[in-house]
Image 1 (cartoon, helix red, strand yellow):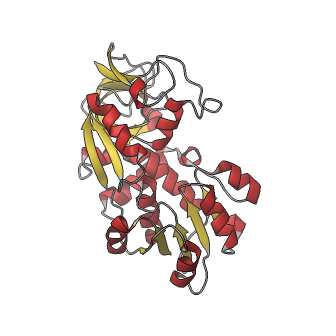
Image 2 (tube, helix red, strand yellow):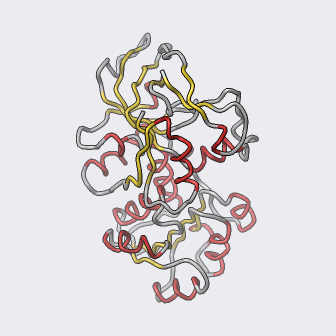
Length: 305
């Protein structure tokens, strides 16, 4: 089978397609023929070596967490799934950017027929991260919540989940994505100089919570705007969270099949949309990451092995 590999830390150019053996399932695992697997900015950071202390890499390394596909083999003791079942879930072993991968059944759920493959293959990271972020700020009816990077892969899910919870949402995003935010019930605000004043104007009665999906400048901004620190959440600016005493919960706190099933149900019911910015074949993985790393895509970039 074909699989994405890299033999050293570096930029996109270290990625290549290797021909490797199709895995066999261990006890409690199934082999999944991957139909779609999204890319995530965190995976680029791992590949570049920025997260080596937290996520050390053994070379050659694979890539990819999100996945959706069809079960082609089952290991000993597996009763949850059978050959031919359509599933979605995640890999802890960075192995989903491949034609096949072995996955523990504890990391998979059935794929609803109404959810397209690219969407199913893009669900895990954004769903778990959005769920954790919204839970962290305890958003609900009557709350006004600001979200930075509101049109990104995680942002598009966060703003919709906040709306499901009954909150009023202000989304910080480039002008190009304001129409999408508006059509999803979100008040768009452009980033850049004067942002604090624009946010105050958009929320004359005050801001109850702030979810940062971009960087430390937004944590500082939230503090300056007077948002209670226990209702400021960042998924990326961990140093700033420690400095200001805010929250920094990520996908790890919500990586359960129960959470994934709940979020997938919202997608299947049409309450949350997962925008797919682009799909690439496996051997175009470098080009796919080039688009992800621009950080200006609306929604997710997906590999189709």
